[in-house]
Image (cartoon, rainbow, N blue to C red):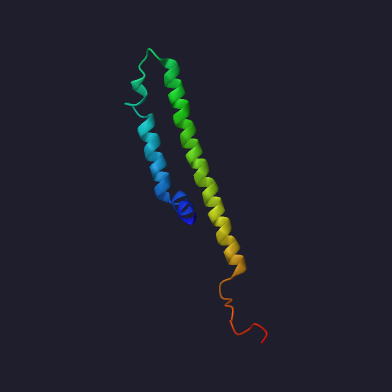
Length: 90
């Protein structure tokens, strides 16, 4: 599960989302439906935009979760403070 968060929080994921959005919304794909089917064209545009928004939403949630995990680890083990295994009270 950690690997999924790693890919979702990487800049490669955002680059893939941008590339997919660019390919879906530039010239050849929107003209597939032609001028005789405007309803299908608008449905296509709304689905493409919705998919892009959902992908960015997933990125934002994964980034926030990963950042919260890092913060939690930093609070548990502050830098410069090393735990001595011999300090267990014995």
